Length: 256
Image (cartoon, rainbow, N blue to C red):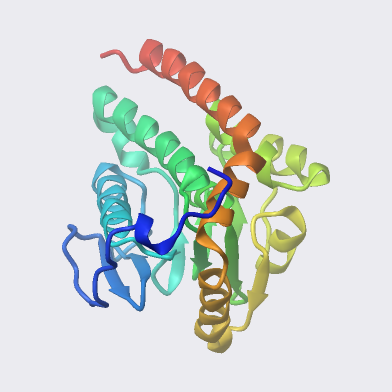
């Protein structure tokens, strides 16, 4: 709906709270109508089935809490190292489920009706980079980290959904470099490419992130949701088709 609804159209907001109710490796906190999802598996924050399930559970909680902004941040030095490569060697069924869940997560974030702020605390590789591309605003830390879609480098063909997300968010001169040649980017270079919007020193990351949270929380929620949907309508339709194409391919490869 384009027209802004009155306050009486919404149920009462829940009181501010700080609590976790979703399984690790995602910690969920909710305070002042801001939902923060902190990814921390103690290692590379790989996007295996446990991590993907935990992120979705936390997003469910954020929407139930009527959060005004969702913040997705990594552990110190690592945003995410991408899909769990061990799964590819272990279980075709789990591989299919993991890839499908990752693709659907990008779609969910890109269509979420509230602003999503990604705080890139370190390296963002492969699926980690696609998560950055799925957020509305991305703040990174200038701490020697790397952002890269490295699939081609490690012998994997980029999925259709990942290509579509790259088309949506990367600057045109960097699309081929990033997707086809696995170009690695420093945080500063990642801004020019379109993976990040802002890079700050490590000591300024929290304050810069908080400034973005306050800015996003000040947007008109109804107008934001409607504009985001209008802006991405065609792209989201293309992403849905890309995911369906991926499923056909993955099912033929991982049917065992």
